[in-house]
Image (cartoon, rainbow, N blue to C red):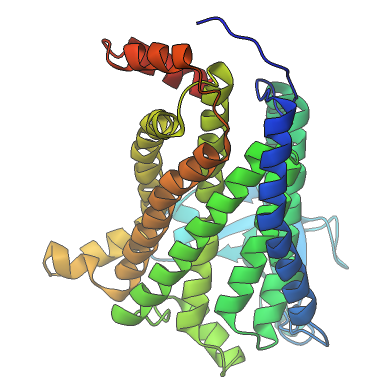
Length: 419
């Protein structure tokens, strides 16, 4: 049915709304979001880490030892077996820079690939001079390859998404800054990890969504849906960790933290990680759903809210199907060494899954997935409730006729929402 209306751009191509409808939606969303923003800012200020934090307080090496860099010029020892291998390294830092020194390398490193040209980091121990090589293999130097990958990533994102991609990377940088300058120091200084995770996640949501997608009706709709999903995730994560007796002590790093921060609750730290882990996927599905509903409405403003919600959920169900296994695959890939080690034990498959180190990943995946799935109908409902339909008799009759047809109109609506 041909129709025309006044257009008001709302921060993204295709999001054209009548001025009166846009003003109404903005007022409603502003009334909801401004208190959330104010609460987030006040909480960040109140919980901001003050005083000396223990970041960087643990030295990498012992007294008098230093970490030096060099390049492997020759592999001397065996490339496998239980014995240490030996390589010759041309030093590029330290008092002996430019000289070639023999370096012992653990067998597991040799077995997985050590060759001439590799850049390595070495621990130099002056006390070992005269008794053998004072240099011991420490790690590989990865700055150059990782830097090139990061540059390629930035170029690809900007080339494909242009200014929107650049804005998204700025939002990512801002979110990571929240983790580094607020979340980690606040937890180290004794703030409750769960509360820190909530406040930090809220700050990251405002930064990432508004910087990546701009301040608009659809972005704010997605933000509200994300807050609801975050609340669900926090509640389920708190219940899941307590009821499943997840202690957060299954990794070596956790035990190190327990020794450094004796009053830190590792269970709460595990809960904090669960909340942050699902935030990225949560933002993804909410912004997609908000965009889909507004695009469907812009394509046909006469569609009633109930039908608009139903059409939006058709897109949402496909998104649910894809995102749920995306989360599962991501966690399985991260925990693959743990899964392989656990599978070596002589026990049943269910017992393996319920082992502490595996159960943490299972609960993390389930909690994030439930919060994500429930955020989709919530976001779709918020967006559908904000629209104002033009309820002409002819428009409703036309919509009803298409809805009772062979489903072509629904398919066309999905295509419009995903464009």
